[in-house]
Length: 152
Image 1 (spheres, one colour):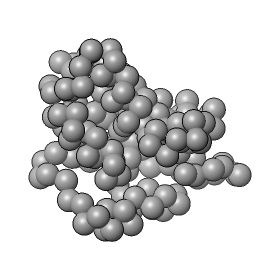
Image 2 (spheres, rainbow, N blue to C red; image 1 turned 90 degrees about the vertical axis):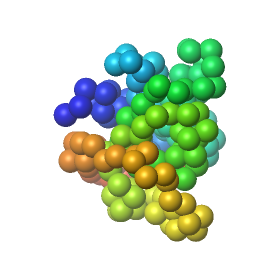
Image 3 (cartoon, rainbow, N blue to C red; image 1 turned 180 degrees about the vertical axis):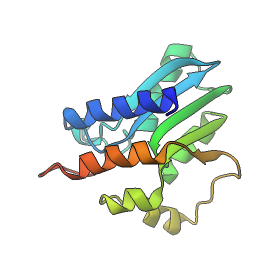
Image 4 (cartoon, rainbow, N blue to C red; image 1 turned 30 degrees about the horizontal axis):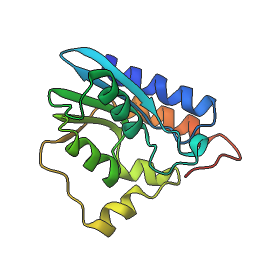
């Protein structure tokens, strides 16, 4: 397993353990160094925009003192929703590596695939790449066993 995806998975597990939101963790890397990590805080913050990618982007910008994350890559446990994919593009992140795909996300009760279709959103070719799907699926399965969780 990729070491940065492992960090993203661990971050997602922290969020799940604390009932912050869905099983979505992210790790932003530049020149082989971790810049920031983030996880879904939608439920904890009552903020529908605080997805794992957004959390990590905000922290990376603060740490680096810039909104321009050119030269960075993001590792995230689920394929970014249209909002997060666009945020990665606005931040000039070079590459997105994701674990679970839209169908996997849909299978645990989220509606990312529906949003992709509604907006007819197609990310730029070669911008996103699937990585370590099986390990991220185990995280999603663990999340799916939690009873009485708030998903959105």
